[in-house]
Amino acid sequence: MKYMFSYKKVFIGLMGIILLNASCKKDFLAPDFSVSSAFTQDAVFKTWVEAEKVLGAAYGYLQNYSGFNIRVGANRSGTSYLAAYSDEATNSYIWTGSWNVTNGTFNQYYNPDDVWSISYQAIRRCNMFLENIDKVTDIDAATILRAKMEARGLRAFYYFELFKRYGGVPLVTNVMSTTGVLSGNTDEYNQPRKTVDETVQFIKNELDTVTKYLPPPTPASAVTVGRMNRGVSIALKGRLMLYYASPLHNPTNINARWQDAALANKQAIDTATKYGAVLFNNYQTLFTSASRSATEIIWFVFQNCGCSLDTYEGMPSLAYGGTNPTLNHIDKYEMRTTGKAIYDAGSGYDPTNPYLNRDPRLGLSVIQAGELFRGYNYAPWWGPGGVDSRSTFSNKQSDGSWTGMVFKKFMDPGAAANRNWPLIRLAELYLNYAEALTEANTTTQAAAFTAVNTVRARAGVAMPAIASTISKDSLVKRIRIERDVELAFEEHRNFDARRWKTAVKDFAGNMWGFRVLYDDATKKFSYPRYVFQVRKYLPHWDLYPIPQAEIDKSNGKLVQNPGY
Image 1 (cartoon, rainbow, N blue to C red):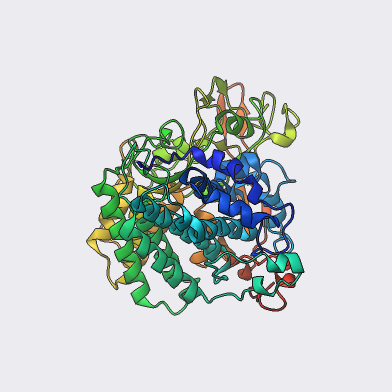
Image 2 (cartoon, rainbow, N blue to C red):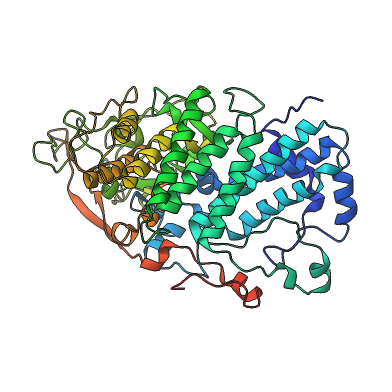
């Protein structure tokens, strides 16, 4: 029988196994099905048609890791993109979770980006599928093997999402019994945390195993697009090894970890490009209309969020307030002609016209004052006509931008097309490789320059190449800035600064924006800078807190991260 699972079946699958859901949860590892679950599981895993829906449900949990779902669906993150929790941006609304956190409230009782329980629910779906799929007899062995590898690959991804937030976590590879739920004895579910080393080794081993059996990525194929395939598992390993090598988890700078990360990411690049992945030639539409077809996007979350996303983001006069990029982030975009940072001597930067001749990705990611977008000229200035500002002249004062800017990235300028959330892109793999290779060597490497300059040379961007004469420390700095620019607002910065252990400096202190002014007589803008928020960030926030409710239920088995 031909294996024709469609990614869209994820949503059907969620409904198809509704009988396996419980009305309450006693523990994050406890079974989430009712007393009749034994019969229900036998029925579900009798045929491939029904069993496939369980795998679909495991895929369905990817929705929780989409920035679009956070912003529109508010699954986590307090209705703010994670960008607003970092120095990339803020949110128009001071009642959102990002303002609470950046003002200093982040602990085991309050974490809008807590994914502890939802990740273990996803892992349990994977374990359920793996434990029962061999009962199915109406499908060929090859299909069952591949489905198992997909489930194990998904489980590895969910464990990675836990690792990058919390460090070492409990590793559960079986479905817990119903005994504890029915008797009230939850000892079985009280699993201790594994070390960071043990957690990483488990995820790595799983990814290495599934890579042997998963099919290669095939662009535009219903068999691999959007699903766990060989390209995805190898790329995910590259990201895992980069995190493991970084200062947060590698305080003594063990060089072998950087070497492993470089090798893993080089393999990821070679695999992706071998099967047709290329950097897309339009940086703006890559995240909108082309997000479902561009081969650059190695893995994505399938989304139907077009109109609603465009309503919740963008200009207040068109809809609501949204995410406001900070100058802390915007200042990282270099000058296009010289390739220099804006404050470097001879850069060509003009503070009276701050968007002129900048890295094209700035204009493709941010809407500036006076810009025509979706048939409307953005008006964030403080004064008459500033209907998109936070001044008294605004139509919606509380919706106005704090910084004089709003998102363009992810926003469709035309038909409000549905779009996918990118989980892994080819550009990230180049930057992962450049970083790891540079850190692994005492001197700069030609391949690292090639990798980072390949990203800068994208059609439509064409930034000057980084000169190969700079020092290792300078190259590390340039690669980090390139990540911040290329991967802006895609949920990387929030974790990159943590793994580099620079968040305590970067995420705290003054956050800057433009208080845009407009002279009606000269028809010119001016851009005075101002501090719109003084933020707090504590060193122990580099690792998230485990929810206190889970600590309390564990009978001493779960140990909280330091500082909480």
